[in-house]
Length: 85
Image (cartoon, rainbow, N blue to C red; front, side, top):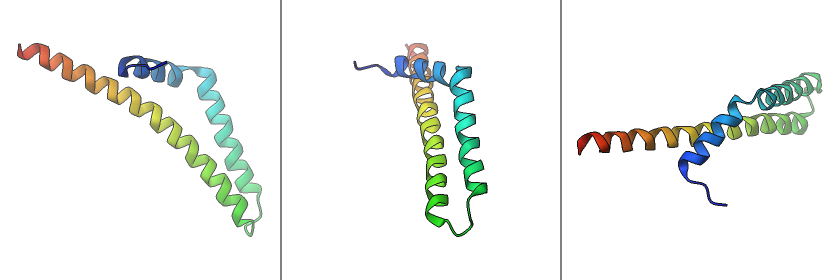
C-alpha cells in the first residue's frame, strides 16, 4: 500500500498523539537510561548498545516528525499556488 504525503503525515501525527505510544517510548527510554546507569563503567559494549538503542528511538521520532513536516510544507505550497492563480 503506497500512501501519499498527506496520509503519511496524518498517520504520523496520530501516532505521535497516541498516549499509549508516548508512554511506551518514555518507558523504553527510561529503561535504557536505568540499565546504562546500573551498568559497570567498564561495560563499554553494553553502554554503547544502550546508547545506540536510545538514539534509535530519537531517529524513529525524528522520522515521524519529518513526515508531518513534509506534509505541512506540501500543504503550504499548494495553498500558495492557489493564491497566485
